[in-house]
Length: 318
Image (cartoon, rainbow, N blue to C red; front, side, top):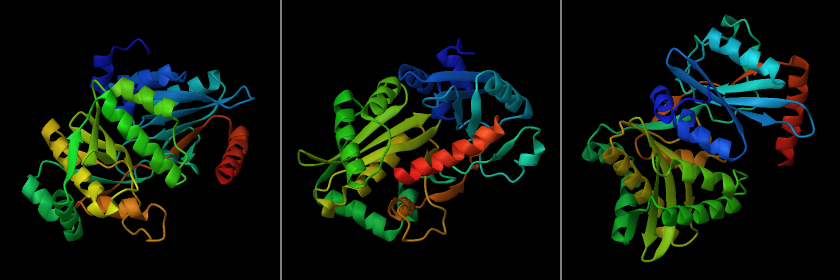
């Protein structure tokens, strides 16, 4: 199925991670990319070898809901290619009808999800006036404060803008002790997506960049992908104006929904490490949106238990 043309695949995809460009970026990183097509839906997944073993794991992110037949094809592929499991994280609303027992394969809720089950979304079909009205008063105040203090937001969807974003993003990762993807990963993704999906907004105070977002537009949806910020001039509230300008950019591009790519659930605790960015996003009048859980299609049950144990140990070490 890897012979699909870009237009064919993107007509079937309903999320950037299922797009042709995303798959091409992963292939350029040396990752094996496979695709299954059924009923005009694309199921693009990647294969990740486990070091020092003959085994691998598969990852199928942000597809539509898989059918029994798709699961059978995935299972057969896994058997032939020494996969221990294939992790599925569909981009669908949480659905109790997605019962594990409805399938004849060993499908179970994953103990190690890669995406959070919750995100926050914003209806971009509303007018700018109504979007401002539905925000929390503190968020509106901070936007106006940033404007008053002279913060300027520039659309820098260029290689120059990307490099400013990358610098701020990795500064933020180091500050927050977050172990994410490598610079090579981010640059490869940018180069693959910059002419079709990716946008960069940068917040400046004078000539000093204070924050930057990388955003994606795909099929009338806008996505907040990554963000970075400086420790300088925090009192000017640059991130608040940056997010507001991101919302306006999404509307300008024709997006109907803004997906902020991850959140705690609405009953979150203030002590949780993610509470800060969850509260920040919530300030824009978003809707908490419950997405599908992460599922593992288990192909080798005994090795699956060993894999999960090793994964847990590795997480604790990191």
